[in-house]
Length: 467
Ligand SMILES: Cc1ncc(COP(=O)(O)O)c(C=O)c1O
Image 1 (cartoon, rainbow, N blue to C red):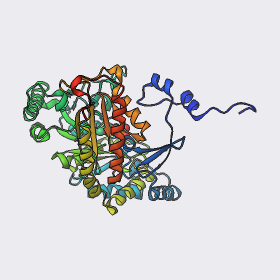
Image 2 (cartoon, helix red, strand yellow):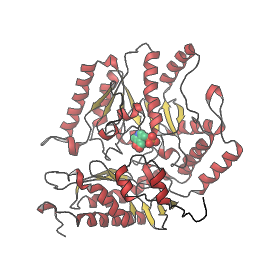
Image 3 (cartoon, helix red, strand yellow):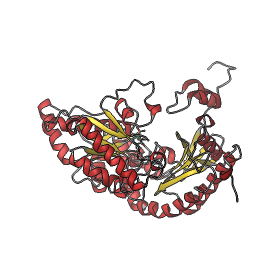
Image 4 (spheres, helix red, strand yellow):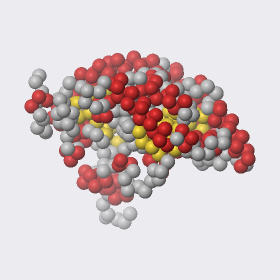
């Protein structure tokens, strides 16, 4: 840097050099970045020293909260001892072995083995390859199509973006959608028909699945991907009895249920896994995010023994199972994930999260009465508020109003981080360590954020605030 040149601010350098993922790039160029610098417990601090309650756990992931020194200690120790070693060609490392063993105690898939990756996307991408490899191995190579659902979020690789049920993730990317079938989103508030009961809605979705299988042929369908509850698609809880209706159909047609637990796993829904909350019987499972409480990137696929054995036998004919990442089983990430799960056990975090879900859901339910909120939903320590211009008719605000973004911005001014998702939904998903006082603080700030946004709009008469 030459003498006399003014150093660019961090904000200016961001605008000049960073390519922000999942961002309104033009809007970002106008408004600039928010720069986070520090975190402690459920709070984060920006580069101006302002404090915020992190009501989204980052991207649904910082389960143990911020600034956990024990995880930093373990990471530093592992880096000093053995910073990296691959799992390729049978080489191994202790943290990966211990993590796979620990996961076998947690994950409700008998005899599963664990394949590690770096993100939910690469793990789901591996799932697509694994189910196809499996059906090839057992002599059913035509079974390759994948069922998924509107509003699903399964990642952003070429394969998983196609499985994601959100149009923005498809448009202009030149994906290959050939072997992907999108079923109706299980979003009763939006997809239920006038006069249709929740049970009738579930029956309609069950029949749709049967019709699709009849049309495509069970011999051509390998798997169905499903999140227990949908996170990024709008915090959409499955309607009552949904998995009970569809599972027998999948099983009768030898279609594997791939349980995408990237958001739900490790306590989010009030049980260790979302599949336990909703009575799912998954064949395989994808985990990421809270697996390390986001301290380092790591994901895991639980592969049941029936798949592993068939895959291993067929791979023998090839000479190797030719899938893996340089960082599959990265020892530092694995060591942090092991310690993260141990801390969850030692501190009774699953029980704490389940207990906190009661005041959390009660507080969020009260906000369902707010004039801007058409539908409030949630379970455990996750909730969504769907904003509407007219509660009675469920009419949305015009997208140009960017109502959810306005609410999220107003919350930020109140010192609360929440997330605006397409469809005018406000997502709330705090670190699992949140306590009752912090839940009160979160709800009060969220209400003030909603009020601020309300003050900027003209609502239908019945929706204005009466008290
Ligand atoms: C359910 C689900 N699956 C997969 C992914 C993709 O994970 P990643 O962003 O780590 O690639 C996400 C990310 O939010 C997710 O919510």
